[in-house]
Image (tube, rainbow, N blue to C red; front, side, top):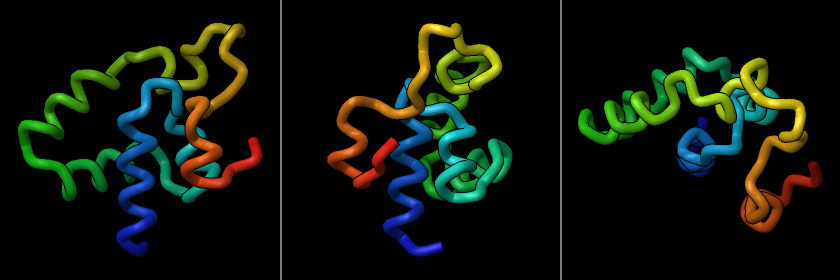
Length: 85
């Protein structure tokens, strides 16, 4: 995986509205693999802050989301990654 992909994965992992399933859809990485990438590329303090933030967060886990949230990206993501969905 190149540095550009890793940067994008980290960015998506920090975004509140981007579930782990979206990262898996785009990059083929499950939640455990994303956690490993975050651990390897963030400082220990930043990693702990991120884990605390996403653990149990309903927007990061599709099965915990309400039915009202029907997208998996922030409004700026298309401009960043050229995704069409």
